[in-house]
Image 1 (cartoon, rainbow, N blue to C red):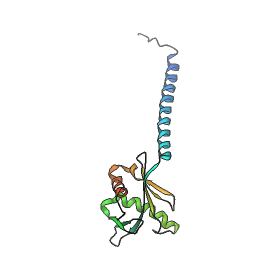
Image 2: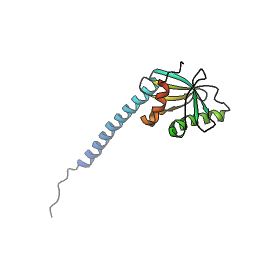
Image 3: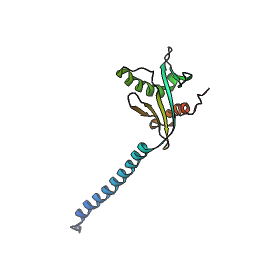
Image 4: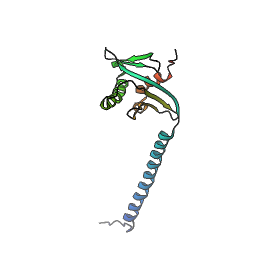
Length: 147
């Protein structure tokens, strides 16, 4: 039988190699995740719109601008938009506040699109759910409601 010659330092070297690789990967993840957090918090607002959301009699959600003009309405086809608005509205209801104060739709320099409720200080980053889900809100932000 042939016996293998194994270097007695090899097991120790493998442990140190594993620790070194883990350290490099961990520092890389920490750096990239830290950068994402900084960009999110420090990014400037490039566009902002105050919007009021009301429940329609037919189950739709009516969106009005600051002048009380109806901007648009959406129903079941825009399921994500309904869910986002209703989840923020639910927090208002729990606080005993109605739709009389506006929500803020905010676009930031880093591309982040958020729906913010200044009353409850709640926020949903709608772009975090994909472009198809945030498209409706991006359209709202780009609409000219000065008519």
